[in-house]
Amino acid sequence: MENKNLQFKTNINCGNCIAKVKPHLDKLEGILDWNVDTENQDKILTVQSENVTKEDVINAIKKTGFIAEPLD
Image (tube, rainbow, N blue to C red; front, side, top):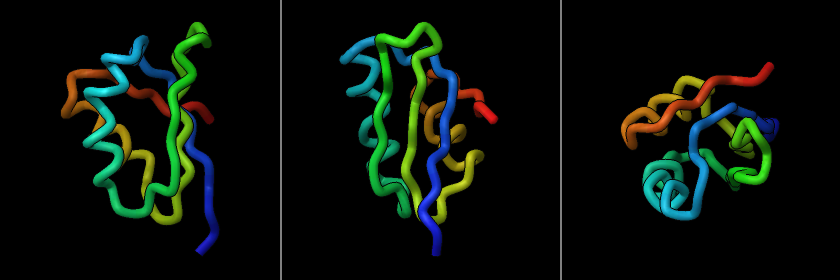
């Protein structure tokens, strides 16, 4: 299966925020790597995945009280 990069605009804006979403993103099967660019004005979350959908990521982020909007 092909690896793909998914990108999202978020309101995850600091290390503590990243710590809150980390367990939720880490447990999603198929995520190879992820990071949040908190220096970017749009707080871009980039997810490298094998079989995770945009909806999977959005739902995981929502559970933590943050927002993720797909960039595409």
